[in-house]
Length: 372
Image 1: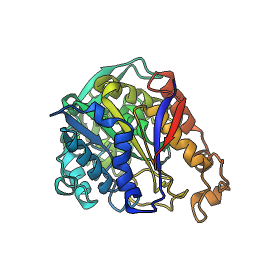
Image 2: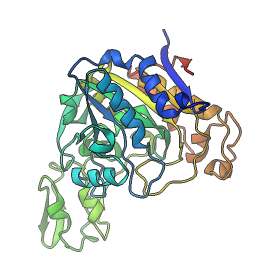
Image 3: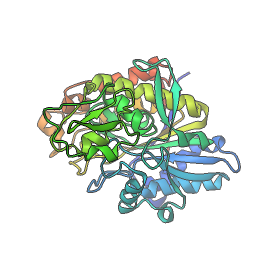
Image 4: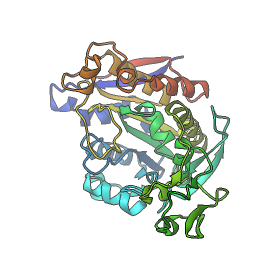
């Protein structure tokens, strides 16, 4: 049987048809209330954006989901994880500062906010899987405490995986900092002694004391290194040597990580929104935003992460491109153009969906059910 994907378009002819109201309608039509028991802890996983990014999903949509959970008798909590490296969202307190700046607070959301992988992103649970590449992934430990997980994704482009939707919200957004390192790089980070100036900035930032100064140069204990990225972020002479994964391998590792999240939480306890609005070519973690590539399409809801991402991709593919966007430069304005392939020069948007279906995370066979 095809997976059901419910769709509310972006048109609003009266107030009941606004996108915020359609979020509530989709919650009901997709049967999300059936997942929630009285007193259940229900986590809403979204993205808080980055400083100076203006295309992230607005908190008003998350608030509507919070209110629906409360109507069902559940206890909502809005969750995120730390970013890789040592940057604005790389600790729990820095991430909460960015969230507040972008309008995500307990007051605006009517729910507490929790950074699932702890203050430095080290709080994790190792989950064994049989993945495309990985056999274990590092999932944020806070997911152990939740009864239900609702993913609320801003559907947009992404340089590595082609697009970011429900699968990326799991495979990057729900894993620890170490897990993100496993997606983006190979093991065995080391220091180039010829470039290292012995400044020692990296030493106190290593969360596991894997870096020492030997004969005036930093040395990484590769057996201890957890790929957190703190050292590379502060190394001015760029002495940290990293073997980065290419975009296709990174995409496959992201899907493996999504499989670990689903295994830990349980697919029967998960639901998904994809907001196909403000479809920017770049991820919400960028500190700026480009022109959107297609007109707003609407909102999708499903219990199947693969089906909802496939439906969102099909919706964007079928839409006309917007003049003045990067798509015009790539000659992709016609409906039906493979937009993310034109923008990024690869087809990893197809790779991630095929890899996820291969692992049994969901189905590309879906039935689109339109609501008013």
